[in-house]
Structures are given as C-alpha cells and as structure tokens.
Length: 187
Image (cartoon, rainbow, N blue to C red; front, top):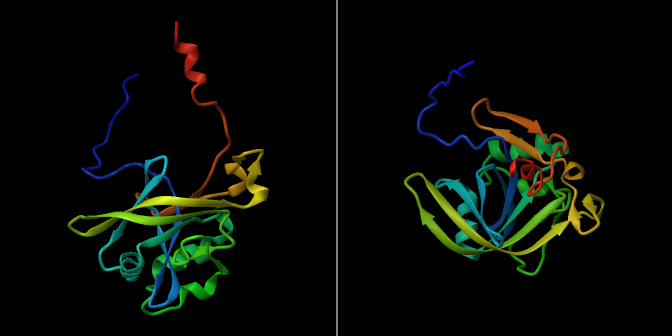
C-alpha cells in the first residue's frame, strides 16, 4: 500500500520539542521566557532561537550568560504564562524560587528538574531572530530524577511542545535501546 504524503511548506518539522524556560538577568532582576526552539550544537553547546523583540535578549547580551531550565509537566501554567507575557510588563521572576551557580548572572528555577547554566559564546543575527549559542558551564539535576549516574527522563516529566497544533505533550515510555536495537539488521 502506497503512503500518501501531504506538503506542509518549507518550515521545520522537528516537533515535539522540550519546552524550556530561559533565564537571564534583565535590569538587575531575574527574568524567564518560554522557548521551545532550543537545539544541541555539540556535547557542550546549545543554541536558542529567540525573536529579536524579546525583553530577555537584552539581558543575555548585557551579561553574556543565560540558563536553560527544562520545564516539567506540573509547571505547564507557569511555563505558558512566561511565553504569553513580556518581562517588560510583568515580574516573571517572582513566579519561581531562583538559584544561581558559578556564573552568578544566569538565574535558574528551583522547581525545574534540570537546569543548564550557560556562557554566551556567539550570537547569530537572523532576519527575525537572534540565535544565542552558549557553552554549558554546569548542569544541575534534581537528585530524585537520577538513576545511578544518569538522568531518568520519565522522572523529569519534561513538557513537550508542537508548533503545528500549538499543544503541549508528555513524554512516552522507553521502548528500545540506542546503538543496540539496530544491530538486528546487521547481517
């Protein structure tokens, strides 16, 4: 049976993606913005694609630091709110207990199970977005989300987002081992 394909246009289709709360100091206060367009550049660098008009961008540029906090399912309302309201109009830092690591200007959210403290290494100027590339200086993880030395992502309960239907999703179950299941085809 032939599969029917539908054209969606020239746009990304890498959804669902983990939802993050990006933290930065802006005007001397912690501010958080909801960003789903966060990518892995290599094992030690992440990239954030943020609209040029966002309030948070100025803080990232000024301090050269930011945090990436993995939003869990149970913070869906707060996370959505941080994407709806500008830090110019609301004190979004007041929603969360904030902590700081080595960089001191990259605010992180206590209730997020995983926090990445990042130092800005490059900014790419796109037509409508700033792409901030940061070196991950340290990662913090809630102890109860660990299985031995590894993060147990089902315990993290990361909030996922899909642009096409503008909905949040939950992580599913593990079902296969990477670098292993494909070996069945190696004959």
